[in-house]
Image (tube, rainbow, N blue to C red; front, side):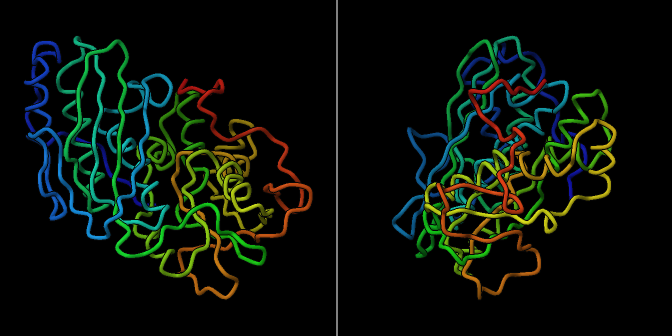
Length: 335
C-alpha cells in the first residue's frame, strides 16, 4: 500500500482566523490554490461552474464529514481531512464505472478557526482530485459552530453504461481490489493513543481508492459494483438486496496482513472482523461473470448464489453474526 508522507504545506501559512479573513477573503484564498483540467469550461468565480459532459449524462454523488463524527483534528491534519473527503466521493464515481471530472465543496467553519486550516483542507481536496484526474470547480462557505465538509463529485460515463448494484446474477464471482480492514485497524490504533503501525494509521487518515479500477471493471463486464465505505458485508449486502441474490464469501480468500494480526492480538479483536466490517477503505468490490478475465490486482473472494430465504451475505455459508458496518445514525464516532 503506497501512502503519502506528512503534508508540510508548500505555501506560506495564512495568518489570523477565518473571521478575520471574512467570507470573500476566505473564498479568494481557497480558490487561489486550485488547479483545473480540460473538462472544466468555467471554474470558480461565476454563479456556477460549467463542466464538459461528452457522454450527455452526469454521474453525481455527495457526502458530508462532520468534525467529531467523521474526523478529529487531534488525529488528522486539515490536509488529511481534505484527502479523505475527496476520496470517499471520488470512489463513489469510480464504483459506477465512471471517470471523475469535478468536485464542489460546501464548507462550514467557526469564525475563530485558524485561517490556515481551510487552506490546508483545500490543498488536500485539490491533490486527491488530481489523483483521480478531476478538479475542484466551486462551492460555498458558511459560518457555523462545527466544522462540516460537504463534497459533491461529478463524473462522466464516456459512452458506457453505469455499473449499478442491481446486476449481480447467480453464478457470478465476487472480487475486490484495494485494501480491506486497514482503516478500521488504524482507527483501533488511534483510539488507544498510538500512532503506529504507521501504514494502518495513514490508511485511516487518507484512504487510497483504486479509481482506475472502476472503469476497468466496467470494461471487463462487471455486473454489479460498489465501494467499501460501510464495511464489506454491509456494502455487499446492498448488492445482494438490490439484485435479490445471496452472496457467500470465503474467509480463506480474505487477506489478513501479519501486522493487522499483530494489532488485533494487541487490542483483542479478530482482524477478520475488520476485513469484513471495517469501512472507509473505499476498496472496490464487484461481481463478474464466471468466465471474466480479471487483472492481477483483483482477488476473487466469493460467489453469487440464488437466495435461500432472503437476499443476504454469508461467510463460509453462515451468517456473520458479529456486529459491524457503519451506520450514520448509530452510536459510532471518531472517539
